[in-house]
Amino acid sequence: MKPPRTIPKATELLDRFATLSSQLETVEAHRNAELAKINAAADALAAPIVKELDEIRGAIAPWWATAEAELTKGKRKSAELGGCMLGTRTSRTTLAIAGNPEAVLAKLQAARWAKPYVRTTHAIDKTAALKALDGPHRSKLTELGFSKQEGTPVFFLERVAQAGTVATTER
Image (cartoon, rainbow, N blue to C red):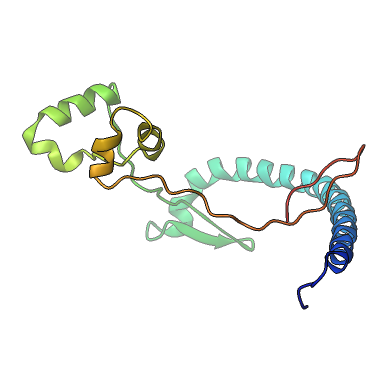
């Protein structure tokens, strides 16, 4: 589509944009309403199934603890039975810290041998530095290479919300 050359042509295109935006909002509202109905219906059908699955899992777990050795002959952690795979999995190893983690961290920081186990991160606080460019440290920050970079103009186009209606998000 070619850019308009006159204000009346631009107004015509913008009117079309506003009309299409309104139509799209109507379509999206309809879609969301229909999806909500579909999700509610699916949830109603799924809820009793999920409940029964949880009950079966709750009943099988203690049984597995006693039957595992017989079914796996001590060679595996899982078995196939009744169209299902069941067994045990070992979760990832995690670090446990006895006591107050902050106190343990302080002890690690004090020990020379523990430096590889302490992470220290440093970053420029850009918000504070930007504010400081208007303060007493301006020249020092400027010497370090700091400066304000003004925002760049970004084109926007959106439908104007009519009085008495709910405005929508930008596109």
